[in-house]
Image 1 (cartoon, rainbow, N blue to C red):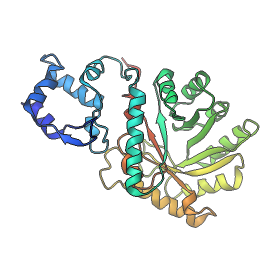
Image 2: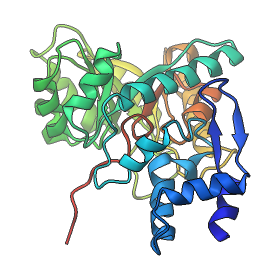
Image 3: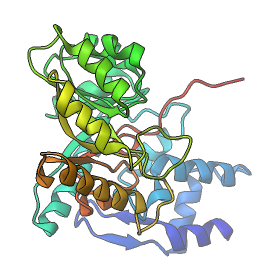
Image 4: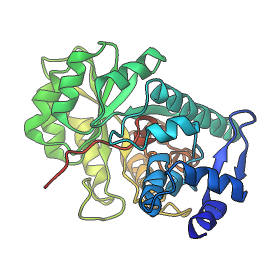
Length: 318
């Protein structure tokens, strides 16, 4: 009964036929879902995992909700977090459709969609590449280097992880590295500029990361210091091309989205204190749980990972 109530009150799905969202309340349907778990005593544990796999816990921010037939859902209960063949491209198409519909409602152009493939095999990236996508993001320098060596040279790679100055040369050895989104200090700017010299025929795109939430666990320049970092790019780094500001919003931000508002304020500060026009300062904000909200707040670059590629595969620790 407890599981039935949770399903009846929180589970919404998108009908593949008419793309409308509905609330599931039928007890028969609840029994049908429970049957997926073989009526075992582990139903609660399996149901929790079911929510994690399908992303229902993020339903307020993720209109994709459930897009898998029951057979695929059962296969997804296995130990691997990787989608079934064809699922990644399907998920990518759904995300693109959501973005398109949101931008049409707002009367604005679509942002760049960076498909974040952290910890995922190259085969899944290739699947999305074959579907026509070209912008992919990685959090770890070595993983980006390895995947770039395995995949097509016309992929536009975005590095979105914590930047270390001693890894800049490694990253810049990737000829199709398009953008580094996590420069957060003048030191980073100088390291990237030095590594780019002699390695590129075109400037490397960079975003300045801003720690809009003030959390110690997150990297980024403080909002009060972001103008100084941007000025370093503009004045002293001809091998770099400033693209805008980037932030990682807190997961429990709610509809107020304070981090997005803070980044918007930072953009105004940069425009007021540099030669850049406001419209020339991009905003990289929005991930799987909040990319639609980010677009509604003006994001020009969204980074979507688990909604496309599934839950990430982290090594198990003892």
